[in-house]
Image 1 (cartoon, rainbow, N blue to C red):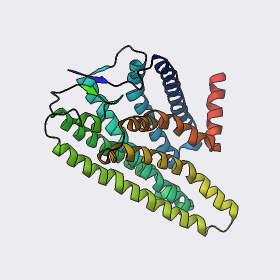
Image 2: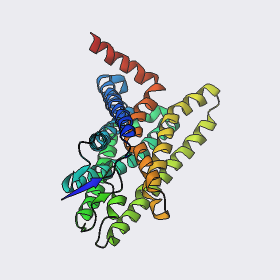
Image 3: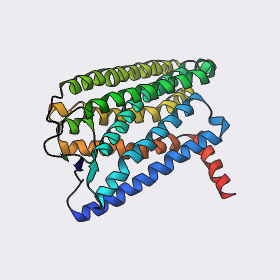
Image 4: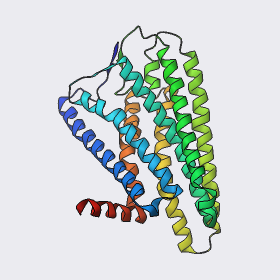
Length: 301
């Protein structure tokens, strides 16, 4: 009927520190991604393919924040360390959805940067509003189907042993450890997912940046090279951070990676990444800064 989630620390003092830290992360992630959405929606100058996909990323980060952090904070303050079976499966569904959506979206954003640098004069034509909407729709649909398959398979398993999840969140790798029925089909689906969503998306992203680098090297002026690199550096940083954490969580458990290290890495992509993404994309982006100033000035008035 329910599972028991493991706390980050049994030390009451550390739990108080963690509560304050994660509450701050929650507020920053919510405020940062909400402001980005408002800035993009209210500023016509940001109605371009790049910012359209960035708004989708902000929505994903908001969903991730509300999927993980409220229950983690409830656990840390000592109100409840349990989660119902239905609540656990719901959390697993949204985490699986977010994970695949973000991998696909980062690949689409890499292609967007490639088109912007290699074909700047035809950028708006090649990435029309209809095509952008189609790509975003495919990303959300594929992620939803994948999450439905994972969640459906997990509900078919029997959990007749201990109900203590060695993690602070319901994820596929940790729940499979508690199953007392065959998980062969689940493992096959995970392997297929790792190859398709992990490896293939990674190769597409690498290929996009290989073409981007070749295009940048062909630019004659140093200022042109700097601007071209500047438009890609933020996205490349997010890609490196996200892929490294996902690979550790979903690919390395089979090679004996530490459960405690796994919890730290999960914190990075469920709490830290949604908080840092708005900062990475805004602190180095003059257009977004201007749009945010207009949003703040509107509220002040």
